[in-house]
Image 1: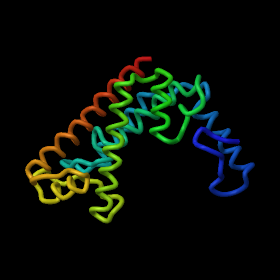
Image 2 (image 1 turned 180 degrees about the vertical axis):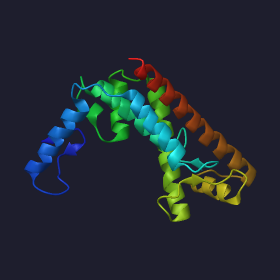
Image 3 (image 1 turned 90 degrees about the vertical axis):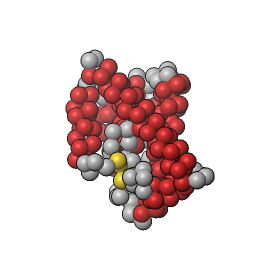
Length: 193
């Protein structure tokens, strides 16, 4: 059977076993048991403190990082995917976000902000991985460092170092702040439900 993300292809074992795993997943994720949004928010808070080194900015785990965008979309999927199938249930974040926007589960403005921030942070993470040669080191260099200017250039910023640093910092800060507000607002509303 095809899932919203495409045909079911088991990672190991038979096709029959793969379909059984999909049925179990669907029953767990989309079933009638209420989702504990408070517990999900608590888990995300723990990730911020345990996976991002104190005093550093981590493109994935810090507040407003990539995980906030992914959790936000996944949370909306859980809420709206129970009554709607199709692309809302997609494992592809951007495809699911587009479906949520189309279904009216998220405003066009918010969906566009989430999408832009997700793409920016995904590009930043890819640049950091290439820049550092390490897939796990996702710490953003200090804004006054030479590394920061080099990273900004890798992200496509051009001009004098001071302008590159300023523009990159403005965009990075804007995307992360936007995700923090959207994530926290959404979780606060859902925790009250």
